[in-house]
Image (tube, rainbow, N blue to C red):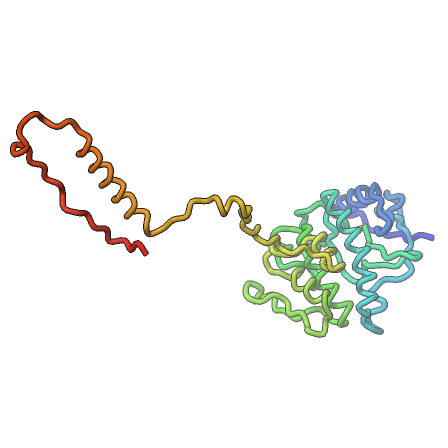
Length: 289
């Protein structure tokens, strides 16, 4: 069983789409929908480009009108999507269209669509003009899609699958307010969504960090190393400073001067001719106690 996607070949966009499909057909990952043959065909007098894809029986957009996912179901959905995204990003590509309709069930696996994969920097567009959706990051029209814009779309999608509605935010005031993530979203999903929906792309979580948060393996910042304790023997042998130090130096100097005066050779003149004047006793301002 397979699905066939057709695009009318009437411009550069069809050529670009065929090129993207060919790139995606070379990728292999257990959580990516496989792209099988791609090519051109004549249909009703016109020409189309086509991609034959692995058939998915269901997608999340079909479930959400009926109910939101439980936390356990969201965990089971998010883990394989992250695995597929990490693989795609490692190939230098971005998904570009992460949303519930592109998260699918094929057989017994959750799989991410692959027909929208493209190089980073491309701006989503139709034949007529660039276009965005409620899932696209605010910078996409200016900078094109990226791994960071995929993370934004994943954050929007995560909130939607848990609440049946997308986060509330005002794109006109996006410089001031990031999307509001409802407190109804349980942890760790609320923290993940808030990290994904940072207005500054550089501040958003990476795919690996999201996976670590999901599994409770987010590494804490390393603590500053504790000062190295000196061995007891070294501490005991270390010289100790004391207020007596300056006083002892003065006393030692006085003793040396006294010894010099006692032992120096005396002149042969009479004792009355020798006048020795000793300096007055020196006092120290440091306490000896």
